[in-house]
Amino acid sequence: MTKLLTILLASTTLAACSATTQATSSEAPATVSSAVTPTQSETDRLNIWFDAKFEEGLKFSPITQTLLGRKTDYDKIDDYSVERWDRQLKWMQDSTAEMKRSFDYAKLSADGKISWDMWLFRLNEAESGVAFRNNEYVLHQFNGQQSYFPTFLINQHRVSSEADMMAFIARLKESARALDQLLARSQANAKAGTRPPRFAYEGVIEQSQKITTGAPFGEGKASALWEATQTKLATLVKDGTITQARSDALKEQARTALTGSLQPAYDRIIAWFKADLPNTKEQSFGVSELPNGEAFYNYRLANQTTTKLTANEIHNIGLSEVKRIRTEMETIKDSVNFAEDLQAFFTFLREDDQFYFSSDDKGAQDYIDTAEKHLAAIKSELPKFFGTLPKADLVVKRVEPFREQDGAAQHYRTGTPDGSRPGTYYAHLSDMRAMPIHSLEVIAYHEGNPGHHMQSSIAQELEGVPKFRAQGGYIPAFGEGWALYSETLAKEMGAYENPYSDFGRLTTEIWRAIRLVVDTGLHSKGWTEEQAVEYFLANSPIPETAVRSEVRRYLVMPGQATSYKIGMLKIQELRAKAERELGDDFDIRGFHDTVLGGGSVPLNILEKMIDQWIAETKGA
Image 1: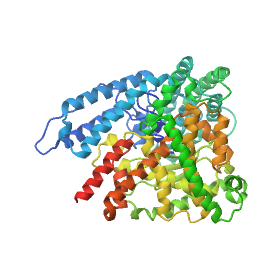
Image 2 (image 1 turned 180 degrees about the vertical axis):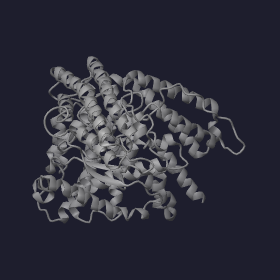
Image 3 (image 1 turned 90 degrees about the vertical axis):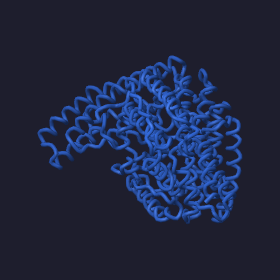
Image 4 (image 1 turned 90 degrees about the horizontal axis):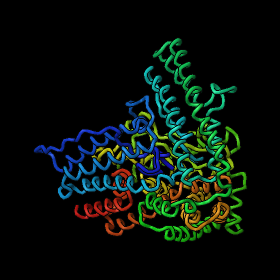
């Protein structure tokens, strides 16, 4: 998965659940001039207005500014209070009213109308989520904010000057304030009847303890944050930017911020989650059991898929896709002369040592090295399938120890638009038996090229498209749908020469089909966690450790898992339509450039973009 802006950022909407979605301004903005000049079209004027509004909006989120490679508000962390979301929503409503007053939709170009529609879509998403704020699991075990802040400070906050280091120290203190705000929202939602399953509480406690274990919080080796602090300071001294004496002084300031501000904030989180733990249910459950839960789940499905599909319809699509993919799996099983049934083949893939690297640091490095090799090979094929290629580099990394979890899903985090920070594909490698070799190749393509890295990097680098579309938000059905589509696209590009790797491709596709069945089963049909695990194991060779981690992810992120397959099916449907209507004039590079050339969009707008491209191609 991406991004969470990209991580945590992708899964929820503005002014509703997410703490870091599209940013908007906390200040009352000055009205942007909409005066007409003789050479400007209505679309030109609107695009200038959009970019000015985007700059206003960034004031809401110092974190987003950093993720975009900027060093403005570099000493600040976002405001995570409900009041901030109210201010942000009011700003969006006022901006939309200004847009409608100042511009004429009928005079816009086709792409200008898409930008207008996207602005309205963002506002509608924000307004739709307000009713469900108390249904949110604010902190949980799957990439929760408690683990995000250290990751952000270590990896995204670049230090090249003394001022940058002072901003880093300030952000250590600011993170404590943000954690207190998130804890307050967790407490308020618990009071309203919204508590995640017990395992989510246990995960928050465990991750918070790992972050504050070791020096300078206590005895032992340096914690990840302390190690990063010392590394950043050492680099400044080595470069001659500061003296050793100044480094020592800043180091003590950082120690004080860590032990005097950040550690107490984590201690408060640990204390409350431990105290409230007895109030949680030991047995897992879907959100439909919570107050307003059924309506919340329906909202989440619409939000994550950008469709009007019901839970039952999505469930049935999943069942149909599982059946189809199992047939393809049978074909590959037979091709490698495996005589027993498919379930036995699943067991063989889970248990045979040939499908795993060694369970040590060497095995983890072997996994990363092999992923890099596959990504290098696929990169050479990209120009045959894309006219526009990403400029940003891609790196593969192991997840930091304080947030690494056995069997947890790999994920991607976007680089900066200027390429100064590469995109990163992160892998959880603490349990190598949860990371089979046969699925390694396909996951690399999903997270890297032609998947998330390509989609996110091209979006950020777009020219002639308003920044709020290129850099301002992530829509799961589009981003995850593209990444899943790219797994099959890689086969067209010559990947998966080994039949077991091709089976790995089918494994990840059926995994996403299973998600449609399991997510809706858990949240709308009363399935237990064990029922979900059993269905998963019966229809895929994915190791049980990974399966349990996956199911628990679905339980705390309702609906998110449905975005992948629904998005993929739509992109495949649109490609088939374009091939059918254009015949010999169909250009795969043109199709892919059109899909990725408008930023992250809901599926109905994507369809409009492809229809326009088909019409333009016919006209040419």
